[in-house]
Image (cartoon, rainbow, N blue to C red; front, side, top):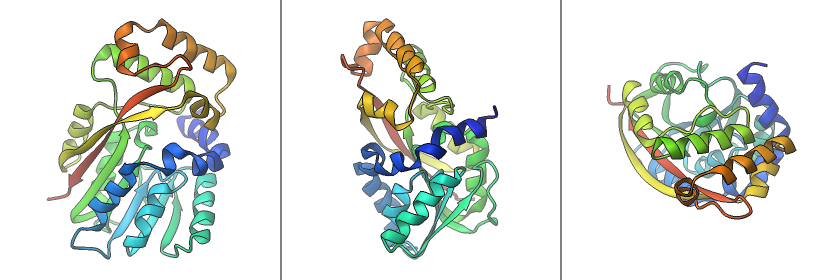
Length: 255
């Protein structure tokens, strides 16, 4: 099975669950990214939401932008976005299906590109960021929110293992240093806007993707085999709930 098919299997049948997910529907980061993107001088901005999922970031930005393109690989996710946008009477949202690695948009056609909790599924982050740079206007902004990789190799190994056991479409949670390097390589001037801790309630986390029981058991074995330093780093609880790091990285297209 190809990686794109794995993504479709993980998210297509679970689109409604992501619309209802409190982890995705809530968070101060939604308002923060809206403030950063929508209070710039070009308030009538044209925004692209890469890997939009169930569209929570799209809905947050749409009332303040001229138009928002909700872009995702999953047809089912985009159907959820279109239906929810209609229910909320957000008539400036359009949906487009495709890969982040080859955007079907003209050069310098968007004022801002945003993404939230999607990039860890992308097979080639560097390619996607270069595509974002290409379709942004000069002075345009790229703003990405995602889970951050472990702060040291020991922590990172356990996090990536648990992530891919829960979801086979997972590629990598990148560290802050990796994110900044990727942004710079794509041509952006960049900085980390903010960092925070993201609590994960285990039962809903695995239920959202309908993780098979053998994989849930494997996650249990991995977490319970983790050394004390790892358990403390992720604030691991008896019910396997834990806490991850998340960050927001911002880049400007200045050339």
